[in-house]
Length: 367
Image (tube, rainbow, N blue to C red; front, side, top):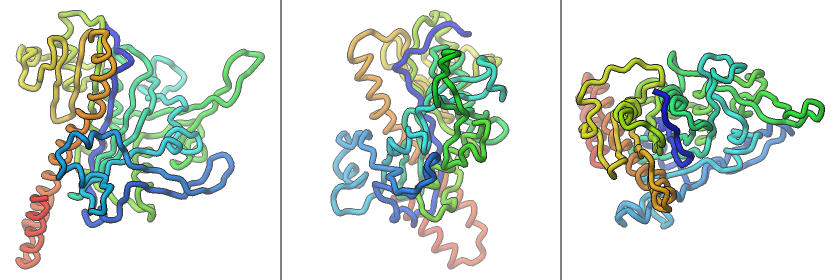
């Protein structure tokens, strides 16, 4: 199924959940600076890497919850919502989000059909006092082809391991007047080793993720642990599609709900294609939320051309609805983390030690 187009107002956020020692939380603040070395001049300077994110809708929360998130008063925080500083995000000295990024489907950067051009739009970080963290990468294809979106959703979430795909980066460094074409050079973020370690501009997404999380602390040691499926993120996608045939819509929804790639053989049951599937929640006649344990999605077919559906709704989906998605994930992985602790210490032979540990687990459950 390749019919249809994806509209520009569509967005994707990939969420990497992790855990950390809760005692570290008191060391976090709203602004995290780091001394980094410029790729070009070789000079070091202190810059803000993470700053407080005001896009989360705190004003829509009840007071006794909102005042503990990014607190402005002299009280202890229970959650920090941060975003990557724009200079660190966009500058080619650091992450270089404005350079050309490609997801390589067959590790052949020379073939256009074997790579998907995409853009990194924003990167957010949520840290909770329970010891759960969520790194959120907003990225999406720079094409409107439905198959490219299916493939990007499926493969980009695998950032390491056998199912992961490599990424290729390049940037324009000049213009050839004789050939009348731009001059391109391979690129890779300097904090990840730059061209010294990636002379062809090819690397793995997990290098980017590790680098981002290592900037949160100053000792350069891995301070977090995986809590979800190894090397996998959870997509949160808002798709505004057009020109999809009526008979193809149930299959479109089914593939998005399961994050299948474009060439995946599918054998849905009648219930799977039922628009009243229990994992579907209708918003309007032509739109719905759909979800699974692997992620969540909002799909709108042929959205009306009005300010609400073209501006207000996409903004709310990126902020308000994503905030709820984040809170639900925090609860989910907090419980999984506690379950892991129960399994680990259930066989503890020192009864006094076991009792102290389980009392701590119970306290964390209440939090």
